[in-house]
Image 1 (spheres, rainbow, N blue to C red):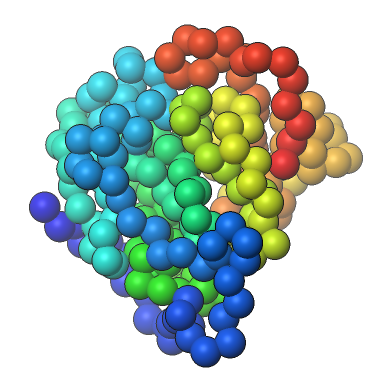
Image 2: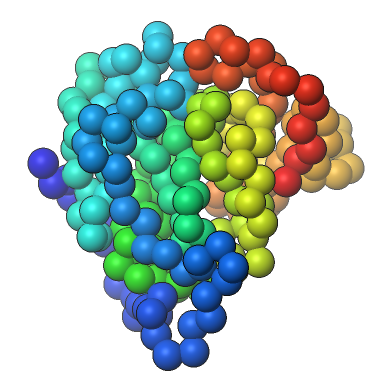
Length: 224
């Protein structure tokens, strides 16, 4: 089933346009979901079953948002991807995150699946927030990224390096958040990090010690 979501007008710079340079990991690679059952299983692996078993699951194929499974608890899960070959970002949102932040994530993956490069994606997101088509959270919005099957990259841009299954973590979306709000001077403290500091999409990232399936973290991983 297709799902409508905010549309932001932009000029798409194709990932296959003349002059695009392929990185060693295959960048840029248009993201595409796995078969439905595998995509659902991967998406819901991001959060504890108490949330993910009743969450709606979405996927993006060729610019279209698909509802793979209808949920009942207001939460939502998906596998986000960037243009790095093999990237997998299983993520589940609580109800407020599903109502607000999910639209931005879906927009980003939609545009990448159509061949848009990161400059175009970033402009579309900025335009979406400026116009009000993308909404910032009004209450606690958070996401779970606790899948042991995640394949993360340090940046969605070509220079991003493969990090793999970095660390199970939670993300709390706090528009305008800065390290100083937490008494910190660095964006990358332990176990808290502040991403996109001071912007509408600022995130507070908190590491946890177990993956969603209950498996403990083996050893210590460095922040990408």
